Each structure stands twice: as C-alpha cells, then as structure tokens.
Amino acid sequence: MKLIIGLGNPGKPYEHTRHNIGFDVIDELANRWNAPLNQTKFNGMYATVYRPEGKVILLKPLTYMNLSGECVRPLMDYFDIEIEDIIVIYDDLDLETGKLRLRGKGSAGGHNGIKSLIQHLGTQEFNRIRVGVSRPPAGMKVADYVLAKFSKEDQPIVKEAVEKSCDAVETALTKPFLEVMNKFNGA
Image 1: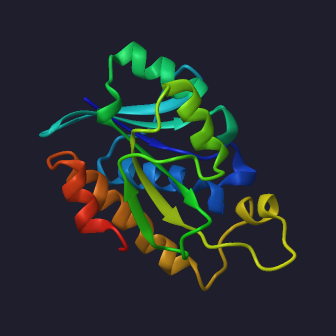
Image 2 (image 1 turned 120 degrees about the horizontal axis):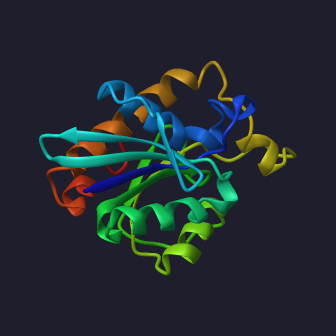
C-alpha cells in the first residue's frame, strides 16, 4: 500500500496558494483517478484508491501545515504503512516556480510541514516531491508570499508542474523511487 501526502492548509482562503501546491497535486490525482477525498481520519481527508498497482491512499492533512506530522503518523500506524511507501509533496522556495526536485531523504530546509513530519516519523528518510514556488520579491515577507496565490503568468507553469508531479507519483507506483528521481528531477 502507498500513501501519497500533499501538504497544505485547509480552508477556502488557502486554496491554490503557493503553500498549498501539495493539496493541488492530491486534488489532481483524485480527479485523474476518479477518487473523491471523502473519508476522514486522524484530522486528515483522504481517498482510498484500488489501482492495478495496488492500494493507494491520497491524503491531505487538515492540521495546518506546521502540524502535518500529527495527522500522518497515526494514519500510517492505523493502515500499517511503511516509511518507504510514502511520498510527500510540498512547496519549495529554493526552486524556480514550476521546477520539480525529487529526493529520498533530506532535512526540512526550513519548511515547517517537513519539520513536523520528521519529528513525528522519527526520520528524514522519506520520499518527497518538492515543487518550486521561487523566493518572494525583495521586501515581501515569506509568510505573506507563500500564502498568496500564483500570478496569472505563473499559472500555466504551475498547472504543468502539478501534472508532472502526478505523473511522477504514478510512475512511483511501479518503479523504484531512484528511477523516478532520475526521470523527473529538474522537470
């Protein structure tokens, strides 16, 4: 069984903001697979999908970004999901908007959602898809920037990044993550 986790914040004001790109990827996967996120457990909204490759859970933690681990750990325990069977999708300020970077481990890099996951999972070694959102313009606070929506010019780039992230997830259902990294890094 695989667990695909998109990080973000719940609620209308946060929809389609830079910080919620993980939610956007989960929504697109749910749309592709005709799998509405209509189940809730451990303060998370999820869908259980039975695919030819096996059972997959799509998850959006509803704990707010900084407490994501409080949802993910108990859900992993409940469904008996191993660390190597999760993929976490989230925004990254250090990547140009729309660029993807896949990794099998790493530090939080200042991302509070990842800090929470590392704390609750007890390891930095989990698969992740980082989606670039670029750095804020000079003088703009990071919090204001990540909680803002993408510019009209960036929207096609972001749409493509969401689609490529979904393609990477689908590939990871049948291929080792290292192969997926080699195929999609820099995409």
